[in-house]
Image (cartoon, rainbow, N blue to C red; front, side, top):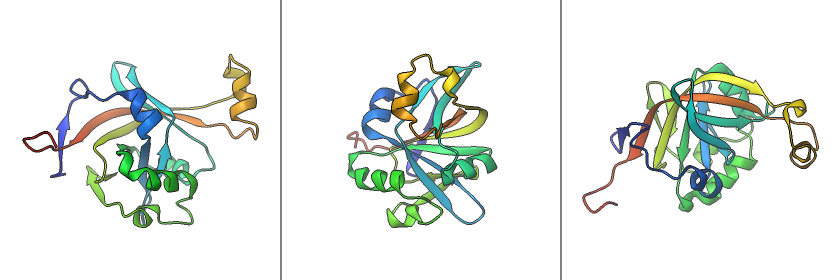
Length: 175
């Protein structure tokens, strides 16, 4: 953690819509053997039940879903544009078949047993506090079901309490 400083949710000055739409994120979790990262460009930041939270969406058939079910915590890393190719790989390959962390040249560090990527500029360490399956009955706009879920492979929504935010240290010139 020596390349990062811990900041509070109130000190976080990131642009959430930019992060999710343009930078994307990597959800990182692990099993007994290895860490796995999955690209996520859907999600949200907010306050729920008087806690700072992140909303993440993962389809049940994803390897990350299996790992999320087994762990109490996970990380969400934000990386800059120089990692776009790796983010695309982590969004299209499965951790069941590929060691995406090694293939992308990422380094894993740990915060209280939770894996995160050292290449990130910001890392959110989250503790799962709720999970809800998305179901077509909940879609007020019926086009969502037809456009996003033609195969009826609905996401699960995970709500993670942000228990720590790590920001990459900058030098005295702000770099």
